[in-house]
Each structure stands twice: as structure tokens, then as C-alpha cells.
Length: 409
Image (tube, rainbow, N blue to C red; front, side, top):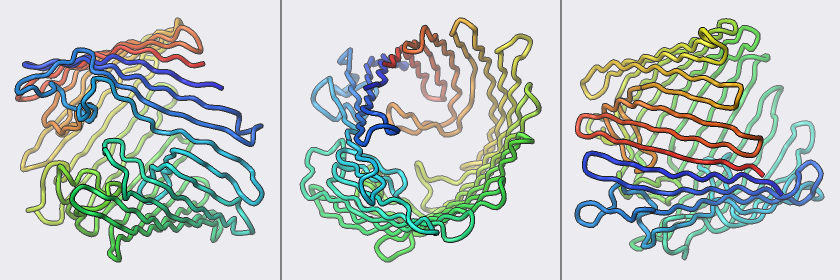
């Protein structure tokens, strides 16, 4: 058995509120997939509100999903499964709480998943899965069902195709949702450097979304370029939680197009250049809202390696936004250095026109962030870190201090 334990204390404050939380995560792995037919994996998280602080009207100062429960301490089990490898005719049998990221929408459930070994010249492979979906913040699982199937193969040289079907049922206090989702994914390599990929999904007999992408990766010239396009084809309304987890707070998500391109070029061992753009357009101007906006963004940056002394890196970034009738230019700079003693230090600043706060699940605008972080690796098994962020926006200033340790065993 081996694993990773990470403990972090997070202290946050603003002009009129403060909060201190503990987050402990634990990953355990049993067996060796190369030598054992049976292996296991567990991943869990524990959070605790250390100060019990609340602000006006007896509300938590920095509300998060953990604050929806009554107690100050909460625990979540994200994964807990057993894999049986190389069973006759099968590639893998997985039993328990699991997450499948290859399905059209990732499947998070308690149940069973089975997939066959590749067969024939086309390397055909099939799979089935099913169980009870995991909704960590719901009080009842009654009426919730998830199951599906997939098939994939190599239909031609350097190509890959996958077809998915998912059936999901979600019973809420006010209604019963039942949705079927079909997905088609294609991948194609041309030579050793060029790759194309595409994805299409169909929900309840209607086109849902489509994605196309291409990339060029020239390792010898240290050059990578990637372009993507996504279109939401139909309005996403009140669906099962897996298909629209934000409907309860954001309501309908309306059709939009999003185009992006990024590139990176290494200049020997001393410098790396990067740049790109993102364009996003909501189909109807009247549907623009929080988390669903029109914007243009162009960005460029450079990293200078071993600047003046060994291990010192300087990162420079600039971006230009055109959104909501505003043109905003931003910049960022950071310095970092790795020392032979295992010490790493970095400090810098960056700008975000729209910044999603992972801790509070809120969107903030016009945010200038300043940060400093120091970490130290004492051995192969023990690492510590401390970091501080200052988020400066028009209406408030937020301070975040993180102190943590990671133990590998």
C-alpha cells in the first residue's frame, strides 16, 4: 500500500469578513497493476471550519458548498474502487465508487464498470457500466440511476472512433428528470506531428454540442500549436445534475460559439515564447449573463530560464480583453527559483477580467492578483508550502493565506 496525504489550512479575509478552514485529502493505492490481478484506490477529502465564523445575518463569511451542512466538519469520498485486471476476455472489471472521464459527460457513480480487451485488426473494445450516481451535496439518492455503454475501435490507420450512450435519472424534490445522451468522438493522427479530434453529442433527440480541434507538435523544433472550436447547439434547461449542475443558480445556458488558438515555441534552453487568442459569442445578445459572456481575448508571454543565475525563471505575460463594451489591457510578471536545497520560491502578479473563485464558486471582475509562494522538499516523502494571494478589485480586497504539508508513503 502507498499513498499521499495533504493537509492545508486556508485563511481568507476581506474588508469586512474573515474565515479559516482546514482541508485534508488522502489518496491510497493498494497493489501493483503490473504484478497484481486485484488493485484498489481510495480518494477522500475532509474539510473543517476552524473558526466557526459568520458574518452579517449569521451567514458564513466566505460561503462554500461545505457550508450547506450543519456541522463544522464534513467529509467526502470521491473514489473507492477495486480493479480486477486481465479477467478472461476482459480488460478490466471495476467495482465501487468511480469516475469515468471518457464518457460524454463524466460519470461519477457507485456501481460496476466492465470493458473488454481489444479484439481483431480494428482493435475493437466495448464496455458497460451502471449504478447510482454520486451527488455529494444532495441529501437523498432515491430515484437516481446512471448506466451506459460504449464501443471504440481503430477504423483506419492512425484513427480512433468511440460511440457512447448514457442514460441518467435524477429525482429532485420538485420533479423527476430522465435524459439519454449520445456521443460520438473521433481522433486522427497525420504523420507524427499533426492531430485532429472532434466530438458531437445529442440529447433527447436534439443536437446538443459539437467540438473540433487540431494540434501540431514538433518536438525537434520545440514548437506546439493548438486550435479548438466549440458550439453549444441548443439551450440547456433543467436537466439531470450531471448534464447541467449549475441550473439551480444560473438557470438556462444559451447557445454560444467559442474559438481558441494557442502556440508555444522554445528558443533553445534559455527562453520560451507563447501566445494565442480566445473568441466567445453568445448566439443571442439578450442571453448574455454571468458565466455566459461575449469576449475577445489575445495574450502573449515569455519565460526566460536560468536568468542571471541557475534555476531563476522570469515569466512575462500580457493580454488584451474586449468584453461588455470595454477594452481592457492586462499584464503579469513573476519570478521563481528552485534551489539545490529543495527550496522553491515564486512571486508575481497577474490580471483577470473575469476570475472564478474556486473556494467560493463566485465570479469576480477586474481582479489584480499579487502572490508569493514558498515550498520546501525535505525528502522524497515530505514537502511543505506556504502561499499568500492578494486579490484587488474595485469593490473589495481579498487576502488568502495557505499553509500545507504533503506526505508520501
